[in-house]
Structures are given as C-alpha cells and as structure tokens.
Length: 563
Image (cartoon, rainbow, N blue to C red; front, side, top):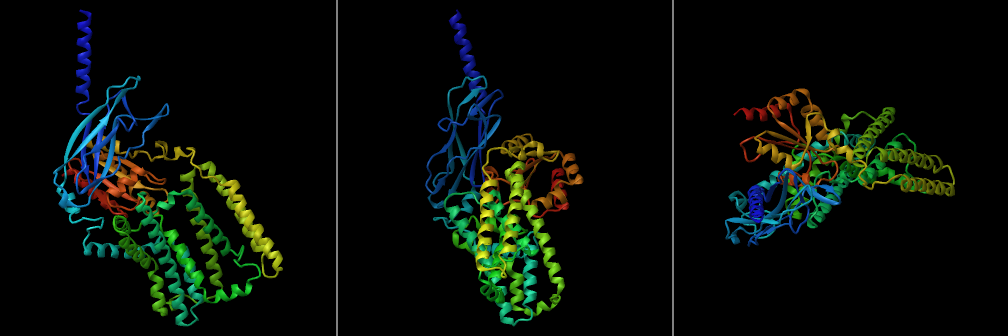
C-alpha cells in the first residue's frame, strides 16, 4: 500500500513538473535575430551550461546562423545563474532568398531547471517553429553574396546625411577650441598669397580625411573579425581617453607658453617649418576628428548605422564624406579667401584669444576626466590627476631648459629628462585594469530617481504586463546624450508626464562596452548612442526618436497612448 502511495505521489510530482514547464519557453523573430525567452519559475534557476542551456536550428540553404548570445547572469559559487525571465539571442542572415525552400525556422531550445535548494530536474528540449517574415525576405532579396542590396538612392541619401552630419560636427563643444585655434592660424596667414591660404586649408582637410580613413580601416578590420563596433566606441577604452587627455592637457599648457615645441639644436628647421604651417594644419585636422567622435550629431547616427552594415567600399565612401563635411568651413575658406576679411586683424587680442582657448581646452580635459571617472572609478582618477601634475612638471622642464639660448647639450638633457619624467611617472601612477572596483558607478544607486537599469528581461516583463516602456540608451562621454537628458528627459515636466501615463523608464548605460546594448543599437540600425525607444502596448514594433530630441517629440509620443 505504501508503495502505491509513493508511486502515485511521484507520478503527480512528475505530472505537475511537466505542466509547470509547459510554457517555460517562447520564441519570436525580431529583425534579423531569433529571441528565445525562458520564464523560470520562482524558487528555481538555470545555470550557464551550454550542453543543457542552448538554442539551435536546422541548417537552411540560403540562411546562415550565428552562435547563441547569452546575457549577463549572476555568479553563485563560481557558476553563472539566471532567474525569472532570460532571453537568448541567435542572429541570422539571409544570403540568398532564392535557395530558401522552407517557410519557417525550427528552433530547439534546451534547458535544465534547478531548485534553489540544490536539486535539478532532468534536461528538457523544446521544439519550436517560427515563420520566416516576408519583410526579412524582401530586405535580403537578391543577396546571393554578402553585398548589401541597398538601392543607389539609399546610398546617396546616407552619403548626404553623413556630409551634413559632418558639417554639424563643427559646432560640437569639444571641437570648437581646435577650430578656433586653427582660425587664428588662418588669420596669421591673411597677408600671404591666395595659394598659401589654400594649401593651409587643404592640409587641414587632409588631416581630417586621413583620420577618417584610418577610422574606416579600423571599422572594416573589426567588422571582418566579428567585433561589435559603433561610433564613439574608442571612448569606452580608458587608454584611449587617457591618451587624448594627455594630448589636450599638454596642448593647453603650450597655449600659455609653458613650453614651445622645438627639437634641441633644430631652431633653424623649426623656423622654416613655421612659415608654411602645413604640418600644424594637418595635425589640427587630426585633433578635430579625435574630439568629434564621442557623440553623433543629428543625421550622422543613421548614416553611420547604415555604413556599418555595408561592404568596405561604401564604409570608406561615407566616412570620407563625413570628413569632407567636418572640413567644409576650411575648404570654403581655401577656395574663397576673401572670407578672411571678416576676421579682425592680427594684434595683441590674438594672445588673449589664444589663452582663452587654453582655458577651453582645460574644460575639454575636465570633460575627459569625467569620462574616465565612469570608466575607472574615483580612486584611480586621483592617480590620473597626480600624473597630470607630474606631466605639467615635465612640460615645464622642457619649456624652461630646452630653449634656444641654452647649449645643444643642455637642450638634449632637458628633453630627455622631461620624457623620462612623463613616461616613467605614467608607469608608476596609471593602472586601468578592471578589477570591479568601479562597478558601483553603474548600479541602481547612481540612477536618477524614477529610472531603472535597462535589461532585456525587464523590457519583456513590462511588455507582457501591457505597460508602456521608454528606453534611454546613452553614455557619460556622449555630449548629445547628456544634453538631451538635461534639457528634455530629466526635466520635471517630462518625468511627471511619464509617471502620469504609467510609463516605465529604463536607462541603458553604454559608457563601458556593453554587448547587450550593442546588439540593441545594431538591431535599430544605430552605430552609437544616443538611441531612444518607446514601446506602446499593442504595437509589435517600438517608436524611435532621432539623436537630438525635444519635449514636443516626447509629448507627441505620449499622445499615442490615448488612441
């Protein structure tokens, strides 16, 4: 009798377990990727064991599938675990629609749920079938090779958007100081002949085009290697930001005559090179590009998003036109030198102006320091400040004792000593290894009240509850993002309007490289932040906003909730 009871109880437990797991897995196709959602029951979890936790598909002619993308989980006893809702992604590409015979994609979703107490259920595998959307077939039609199928009109449109976006980059706050300094250099050349002015302007343009070609080459290489890339991605690297900070800081010191760059014993060569100033113009173009990349300007984000999905030739073309747009004011000045007459004549005001530009560069350095704070944390930032003081000492040593009135020997000694101070102190003070000390910078405690940290699981949860969701993807180094937040999103009236409509507000921080956010940016054809998404209950696809937003745009979105 006892055996019968035990068998009955065991049967009921198995039956209840199967019933409870009946709706553990669901799947859908979003864009060009498969999203498989696992709804893990309370009191249970799923470990990251790829032999049990996976999504696979049958091979289909004309379609290639990438490896499964797993979200970040929480470590428990050295094992990554997932709870509640978990979304696995598998991207695919239709390379030849004519070869596709199947109308659906078969998905095999595996999992093994475990109780938090320690016991685990048997591994399960669910077979799902998703119809291939006709929109994807149309988008990828005639793509028998990896060449993009965009029409010539699309390419021309995005090239023009890149050109206009490059022109707008000239007014970015971090670019203005370099442009102003270059304008001052043009003023000095105003009494020279037209040919010299044209050459100087073209050298500046060449510096910009060269920089964009280098960047395009890096993008092509990274894309071919499968890396996730986006506009401003280099500002996610503490080493890059620190290198740029050093250049800007030293450049600012030179504007206050702390030092003048000259090779020991090479004063004659320095005097000869200063006549044409072509190398200075070329370097000014490079600095302008380095300072322009943290944020996307209006129209530029869409153009870059389009470029990153294209073959190398189109990537190079769009980047060149962005560079032409950034250099456009000086191209115009070189072709039409009479515009120089609108600039005041040289005089003492130029020294004052130069020093004011130095203060603007110090503000730029402060902006870079703020970016470093969110990348490396507060303690390491103290070491960065210490290094900048030592770097200032090295610049002073060079400027004070490597002057032409000293002997060549003393100039060399001063130069070598300055280099040793600058390089040696960098090894002693700077350390950008990520040991988790600054993880709190991106925690919930540092979010603005009313906002939540973005996660795909949270988006899925609120959407399943028919709640409107607004997502703000940004970064601390993105000036456009911060401007939109201060002027629009983080204002009291907009946040009040969100709350009245019951909108869940999520913040996706891409200050440090985030693979999941990168996937979302790519899904919406954006090369970088900012990206603003609004999910309206009942609508399959979300509404998106442009890079620069206004309050009226947000209010118009909220009105759609009343329909």
